[in-house]
Length: 209
Picture 1 (cartoon, rainbow, N blue to C red):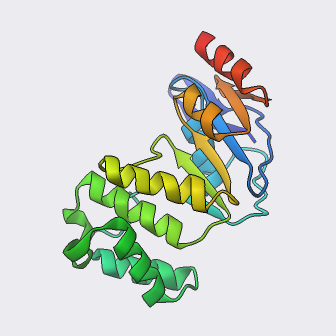
Picture 2: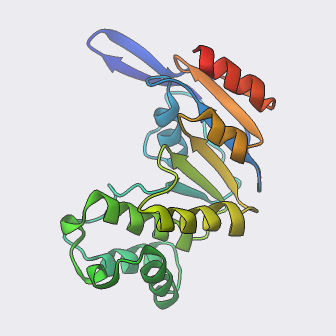
């Protein structure tokens, strides 16, 4: 895939001929400095952006980026947003709502319009909804765990424990995180990418970028 942005300074290749594959249960980490193209790549994979050339072939159901709270309708309550998305994805509303309410721990705020939520509350709602959809592959852009320490452990157990069978694509700044959770790494610099299965080598290269 290639993504070119046209700016006043000329064309910028944010993603430059990047290609990879992630299967069920496989975890790919994306490493790169700010401006390397990580977030642009995640947005292409999620469908938020379209590539200038190339294509995304989705053999697994693919989530939106975890904890992405910008897609909610602010005038709707948490309850109404769950109702809308469960209908959109063909899921039973009551089961989906019960899961989201329990996992997000938002309580009475599920009946409050989302525009009144803090950023943390929006991320809790988005995180819980992402998990309720039972996607086969999850996209993570920087934010892996949200909330206080107890809630972080809850998210960790759900993602890396109960959903170990799912694919995962993680764009983070921490080489340690990639070494702990992934089987391979995509090192990005100026839009270009290289896949490595030697995660120690990947961490060393990332440290030299």
